[in-house]
Image 1 (cartoon, rainbow over the protein chains, first blue to last red):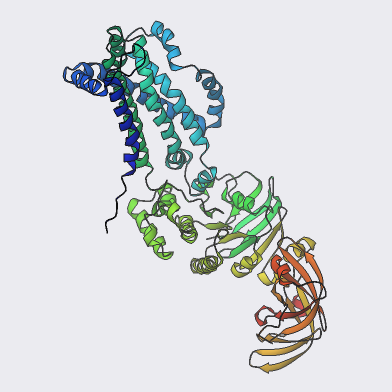
Image 2 (image 1 turned 45 degrees about the vertical axis):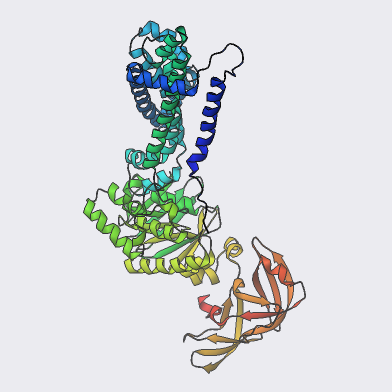
Length: 254
Length: 350
């Protein structure tokens, strides 16, 4: 008697993606798109991605975007975690900075663009600053909340075991706040890509966003979709990488 | 391990609390929920603010922060660090005290062996059973060799069997190392089983302190009587030798078999919770009497009943579930007074 082996769980997630791509291919091949809209088939977009890669156009535009996201996100995360930790750990710092951050936080990251164009000018620092602003506030918030929500009984236990306050923060509070901090990082990793593309489309002549704008003026729908696909994959990979880091860091006890 | 004194401790719960814990003794702090027992432990550990004085070996430690008081504390919910393995939990206090790495490892091994949990060294708290967690928490508190051990209802969440086992183990280690220990509980049985002395705490004050028998059979004041329950005291008219170590005493019209320890007695006491009331005759016929149930008074978690036997009225404490046994007022019942629960004493000592 043979037993059927169930497919791996990840395969179930791939089924709708494969179906959507197949549907896209059919609709484009048989020109079933309503109106005058032009939709290149999926295979044509894949060919375009390949062409962009071998000609070096993709790397030329992708690498500056990647660099900006990495620098902006890391800087925003480091400062955000530092300020958030201070706010969550020391009530006085939380009370002092809380209202200020609450006022600035709701301003959309792209809302800063006109002001930053005047202050910084249109150069490499502009998109990095936008990503920094986009990352800093949410990471600062989730870190402060994570630190505040650490059960104070653990702090008392550490104190009774002779630990100093900085040591309690480093060995008990921060490790226990890691899940909250990682949640903030994961959400902002994807957001950083969305923001950088928008910033590059509006103000910066290099990067994936700029390539998107050039493609639009040349009516290269296949290139536009290729860029969007690269963006989608990068958001996914960044979120996954941070999830992996979180699992490695908190392995065993969660 | 030295002496600990509390003088006129006052804060939001404590109302001028005085207490002395003798070197090497296990003092049980007994009281109902909300009496201030945990607050008092936190005062001793330096975890909350207070007025008054805490003295370790005659030296005031009021200005000394918690981290420098060298007190081992097992919290009510144990509070093991979830992100550290059992071994690293135990080593935590050693790291903060600046022990060298090899010394830390040696001490952790020693404690893991002592509590028979060496196999749990790399396991995280989330994967441990209640009893295992309890042992790790105790090992963690003892690791830096504290001068005082504080235990806050540590067996609360465990089953009866594990609790019994751990209690014996704790008592054994406490005696072996002559650790000065303050153990908090609201359970009279637990207090009686563990304590060298019991301090009864009610409404933020220590109401009585003494040996377990003094507290159980000579409770002082209405409040303690209400909390512990008044013992049944039977006056003995005559005592007859039956066999080696066994006497028959005639007390309040009841012929009781009593284990004899050689001391003279003219009274026998038995706590209400040790008076067994049954609707049917038990197989054991020693110290079993027929009687009639005269009164049923509902208390929190239990029922108190008054049983009238041939010669006297006995107060018994029954679990709430007794209602299901069909016992009602004026029903005929059998009363069993277990040999081991009878406490003979001499009038002057009571």
